[in-house]
Length: 346
Ligand code: FES
Ligand SMILES: [Fe+2]
Image 1 (cartoon, helix red, strand yellow):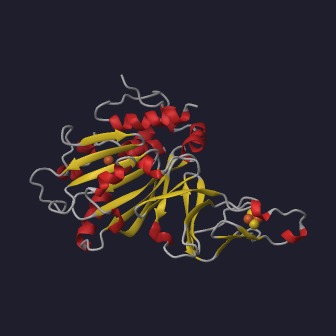
Image 2 (tube, rainbow, N blue to C red):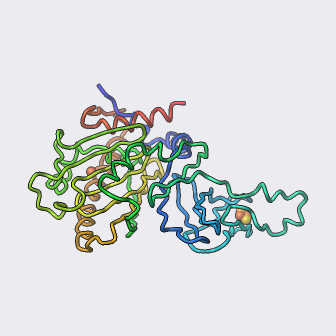
Image 3 (cartoon, rainbow, N blue to C red):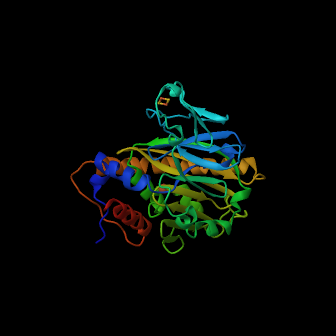
């Protein structure tokens, strides 16, 4: 019998503290896309788990990531996004270059031995896959390409990610633990029951819907039902691909015209999760097709919200201490739970 993770891991603040320390400060986190800092002299901010991040493109055109925390007394330094040559903390006006170096600290000339060269913003690892920007607070982490494994090549079979244009971002929060949201993404065992619209278009039967895991990634491949005449039929992309990079990054590619949406699943509390999804399309994708896809996706999203919030209400009761996984249909959930348990184990 394959047991789930203990259900108190989905409500206990101490487990979330350990996850922040042992998972989120050591893994690749999607923070946005290159279009948010195209020109030298620009920056944007993001959160990687609970870690505030600023991504900059300085005059030397290099994309860099820093901990967005002032070296003085710890205020968050940059807000939002913009174009400027320096980042100034709003507390006491310490000012940093986009290369992270401390340029000015008011009254520092009155202090003995003010070691400004040791007070740069803390650099973090930054890496990209096509237009997608990832940050890892652990500068010694293996490269992003290693983490992504076979996923970029699988995506490249149907889509050139470099040709995609960013269109919009959706943001929302869920009353559930971040792991419940990830696990829900990782199985389509619930699709025939809970997603009638999706299941009418994609063949979600156990033999047709393919699951695959590899290192830190999990992938699902769903073909259109034979004879499907929906808006998804007959486009450049013959089947759907849904990828996940542990611990918390999802990618959706639907059949049809070139499309991709992706984003992180971020814990904001033991029972509260924030998500955002960045939507990209090829430049020539028809506006009407795009709207149909978004309406379809929003419907699936509403259905999933009800599911994950229902799970949280069930598992938080504390009477049962774990559930029972289906090792075939939920093999990607089992993979996720193994990686998570291993990361927390030391
Ligand atoms: S905390 Fe940033 S300048 Fe004081
Ligand atoms: Fe779902």
